[in-house]
Amino acid sequence: MTLAGDLRHRGAGGPKVSRRRFEADLVAGKYPPGRPPPGGVLTDTDAEVARLALEMVEAGLRAGSLAISRETVPACRACGHLTGTGDHPCRACGSTGTRARTGLHLVAEPAYGRPALDRPDIHADRHRQPDHLRRTVGDADRRLLLSRTRDHGIDLGPLGLDGLVLDPRAGLHATVLAAARRYRADTAVMTVTENAARHIAAHGRPFREHEGTRLRYALHGRLPYGPSAGLKPLYEAYRATPGAKDGFHEWFLPLFSLRVKSATRPEQLPALFKYYMRARLARPATVDAAVLESVRRSVRAGRTGWITDRRTLATVMAARATGRCRGAEAG
Ligand SMILES: [Zn+2]
Image (cartoon, rainbow, N blue to C red; front, side, top):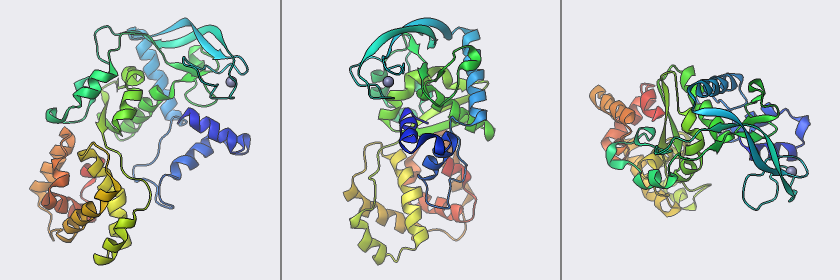
């Protein structure tokens, strides 16, 4: 989904593997072997994503929030790749010479006085709104270039912008909305770190709503990467099954990162594992439907308190074991 993906694709032997296959393998590599995510995988190389993105661009052009205009932008002297502002070598070929290049581009028109990120764009209850983030993303009062030179991505050729693709930061939003449509959901919640939100919010602004489907961000904190030595004795003490360990790493920790937006440190993991195992051991034999319904309401409203309430978590775990809890997983 990224320019980095283009470069890795080239590094991996380019044409020998199709870009689409390469991208699919990259995504698959993020999940354990043989266990792709239950909701499926969608990237900006999928035709349904490209179709929706173009539909959204056309709607934006009609509404006047987007425009196709002649722009002069810095480009690599060697390969023509748009280098953007800033003093760095070309990200496509590594060359350092630039020249100004004038041509047609897709731009987002300024929305004076309107923030690039507003309260309804964040999936969180009002007590946990990231006011600092919204202030630092700034206002949408400058024109933003939305077309890029890039080998792969959502081709803007059908709009007469030959050789240009939609900026991947915008394309990402179209990808999430396409997934929401696939499930006939009217709201898609995209989980991102605060830094990622800061990086993509302005480019995503024209792509967060389309024909009644809306995209909101749920912020999550960072989790420690890789194995944690501190957990091994606890696995043994609790006689944790592979299923219990997977549930901790792949289900509980991502949920916990939605609750606690600051980075989780490796030394916190043992205490979190104990909490998780105690909830797991306390799973009720019968699921209280009222508790489950209140969790669903919380998930819809962006409330996360239930994750650190052990009895509620135990109920959700029991419901998951009986396949009754898709709503909470989607949170
Ligand atoms: Zn170049």
